Length: 188
Ligand SMILES: C[S@@+](CC[C@H](N)C(=O)[O-])C[C@H]1O[C@@H](n2cnc3c(N)ncnc32)[C@H](O)[C@@H]1O
Image (tube, rainbow, N blue to C red):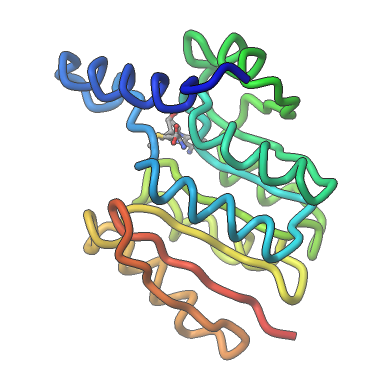
């Protein structure tokens, strides 16, 4: 990967989004500090089976894929649409990712139980609650569930976080990085 590629991609996304009035047409890339933390979680957890819901143009996907590669794993990233530049960005970053054009909840519902080491949710926040129990069911014991925007949009994610909180096997923390990252460890 060329030096500065990820920083340039992020800066380009900020510039693009500032000129785009339609929220759903904005890339809404993860903040770099959040992406760096998420990547470290992948490495520290030794997460080899990583799933991301909400690919956009691949910014967070690249961070996840670089980290997964470090631990011998790979990333499946799911989005309802394929964004312009996505495949070029992945190629320029030199990462191989399995892309799935699907609705995130349907994708999770079809996965076997315990088949994911780390799940990252970065799609439409109000939909997560309707995906229950699959975001937790697909995780292996000791797996990690990360959810962005929990401080920027607390009301939207509250019902979903309450479901996680109702699970005695879950240990959660909110990290005040970027827009707020909720990190849950699923106990045995
Ligand atoms: C905040 S952006 C993702 C940003 C991306 N993770 C990044 O950091 O570059 C949200 C993405 O979720 C996708 N999305 C929205 N609803 C979805 C759903 N139900 N299933 C899968 N993807 C969805 C959108 O198309 C959009 O690309």
